[in-house]
Image (tube, rainbow, N blue to C red):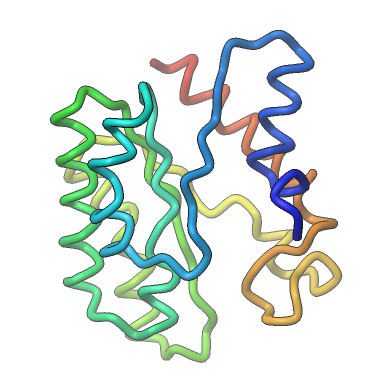
Length: 168
């Protein structure tokens, strides 16, 4: 899918068209793990003036069966680095498919609210359930939303981001 049609670009386009002084930086890399995000974050902080960091990482760790303790440590390190740089943080709930087993899936998915509570940061529950459960809005892998879903995700993200920014 062209980057211009992904939810981040669509959301930025909306902000530009409505004269809102919000600049989104899509630093995501397909296939990235929490370890990769942690390695790249220092240079991203140096390159950009970041007010908010939306952490949407861990899905690839889960799909690769990484130990939840490693995922938790990496997410906590990302959060610590952001806090050291006075960056406000939102942690987005990630889900993995049920075929990973109930115990692993529950441990994995339980990380996000637990970390957000312990770290006293903003938590975004999984809010695209109706997209994730609609096969016509998902890529063939059944994991990633397709191009048709991107405007819907953009709308939902604008609502989520508005709440975060207004809450301060």
